[in-house]
Image (cartoon, rainbow, N blue to C red):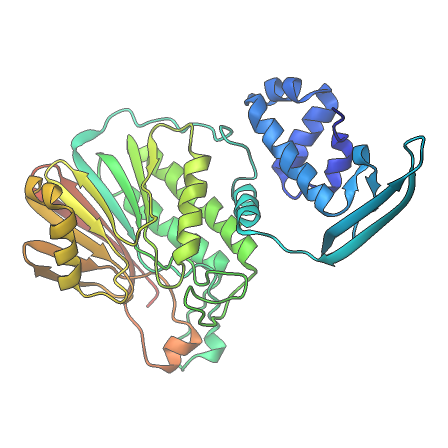
Length: 391
């Protein structure tokens, strides 16, 4: 069976890792030798080559199958007809082109490549802390971060002069996490909790999940890639402080789909790091039980605390009975509110995000902050640390 020359695939590589793998295959002469050189499995190399070959073929390029004419930019081959001579050479060939269409699976694969720029197992391990206290867990609350939002102080009311874009959002979250990590102590477990709406838009249409148009800083693919890098920096920092890191991405009303993609990609990136676990977020309800503590997570949109309480008691009756300390963590309203319902403490957490034009025009605003809460395995909440930004 003939295979495509990897040099042909170079033109269809879109990430640094694509180029690194192709260069290794070309230089070493085979996928097997390239895998040994790069320190990864042969199957990983084969999968990447297959994806790139499929991409090339969709654009009319597969020389070992007599396809040599690439489609126009933004188009793909809809139908190809080839007439052969008696000797097997090509007599005539018709290539019908159409605007490029990508199915959901292809989009997810592209997102994975864009996030990691590397293959499964390439993530280097972070050195674990020398000493931790197994009695404690520290939970870092990322409020509605609206990564990708564009807020320009010139378009907002006087006095609201805080800008927001992906660069600002990145630096502020890194700084806040860094400061919190230095003050939470030596808790064995660090939980990175995104309470939802981490992303401002949920699609390349610059719309929320429900279809509301929003102001964005850059294209969705770049936003996702930068978010992946941001989470990697934060998780690696937490791995220096905590023996174990648990990542929780709650699905918000702005980013219900993007939140799922983010968790899948982080899980892939840290697949060989046994100290990191990513909780599944297929449901808008997520729960995590740790010793005598039950944590429930929901963004808080279109549901009341009483409804959440009823759902928890109904579906998590064993966990409820086994836990004396019960907490529900939410976002959505961008400011900190707490109230106890039926022996469960409900907390909506504040956000670091600046207001956009719509919220500024509507008179909305709140303290911008990020909080870390430390819990004891038996007695529950032990202490809190809050970092404020802005005025």
